[in-house]
Image 1 (cartoon, rainbow, N blue to C red):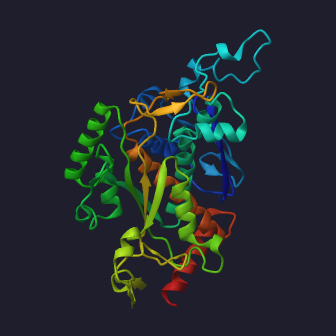
Image 2 (cartoon, one colour):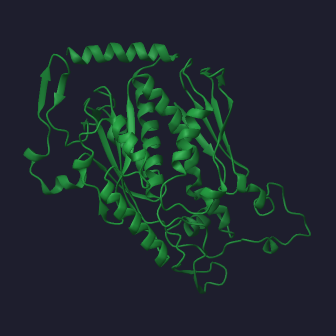
Image 3 (tube, one colour):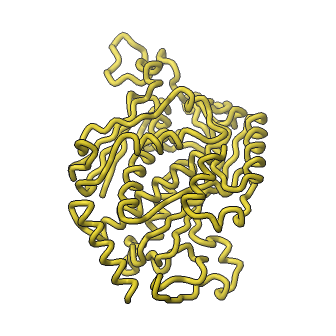
Length: 393
């Protein structure tokens, strides 16, 4: 399975094309829109979420609620485009139009964004040409693609969930959720304003977000994605680029503003002896092989172990501040305070939704490499046979 996304933040629409999905898989716009709505939620979102109501249009690859096996095209219209038709117009400017007279040209790069380096790379003197595509608005389509991937994973018995672990230094008490089922955890998170499973930590996180907004500042945090039901052996140890942990880490780091990844205990392992890091192996007739603990987060040697996969991602504070940092105008070379675009004081809750979907997409791609079939029932049979094999190994 492969995919591409296209579109600018204030352009007419966002588009994705997914190729390689098996035929005969259930897929509707409602399945995707449900996840897009979650991405727009969470305490700390800015005005853009009040302007846009993201709804997907499926224009190819699906007929009567079933995938055809041909490329699936997804589109989300930008409602705000009507206010940007001249600024972001497709057609060339007339000879009598001075580009400098068009509003919202940007010559002042914002610290922490792609503005300056992107302008250097592609030769853009108007840095809007950079920020329009480098914007986190692109993650709308990553969630749409991930919703399709999640549906595929569900068809073969794999479930995913993501939650907020840390915001602005306020950390969750893991004992509040570690004994919850995936469905229970999903329910708790869905009812929480910051998608956190710890009610007490959630209250403090909300306050931290409000305090940051009052200061004109932003805060980041940590999100965790949990996957259950993945059979052992997905990925490979034989080549670096086939390792599943590398693929999942790459997917997490591809999200805007993410600066770190942990699998299992992650960086905590640096302070622990091996006896407190590695997971002992056991076997019984009901489960087959399993680990007595899951400190390595369900991954060993670049492959899934059959235990829950646990991946954390670190999101930096959004760099667009209402108390802007100093920058340098690329035209005058004079210092100036950075240009302000619409921003959220904290987008960590929304980022947890994005993280779940990019991780689901990467896992779906890895599984499709392992089990090749043109129909969803063909893949289901292959996965079922493989599960029986590893259980009796």
